[in-house]
Length: 176
Image 1 (cartoon, rainbow, N blue to C red):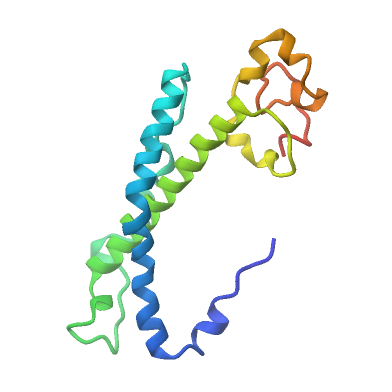
Image 2 (cartoon, rainbow, N blue to C red; image 1 turned 135 degrees about the vertical axis):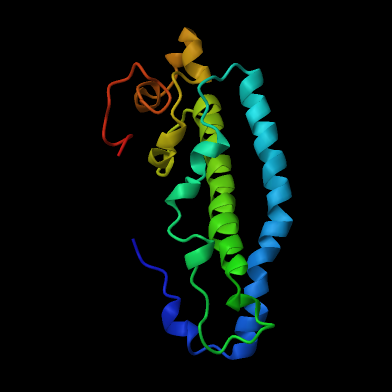
């Protein structure tokens, strides 16, 4: 996988671009999180209404509070050059970013992705070149596997794929 290059260009950016760019981190949070939460609630309700059990919870995507490396007392801040009005010099700023914003928002979108993969594996057990990445949303049987007559119409790789058919033999092409 190719690595994203950021550090090389960061030091060459004009200060004004960085000052404008930093708040842009928070706008997606303010704009998307309410919709992501609503979407999670709707998809989760959909899955519950159709009979899904054993769904992972949002909490299973959030890192343990104790696993964070820094606490308030030892949180890293800028030692030099940070004036009293510079929010980056305060531990609470970094704790908010590193213990709340990052892990909770990444967990929210990971959870939403998980739920959508479950829905996809349930309703659409049809292979494509990215389907192997849907493994965390594996289901016991897809909707199409419930109906014997319809199951026979599935392509053999779709009929026997362990992502949506727990009775299928494991095949590393489908479960990397």
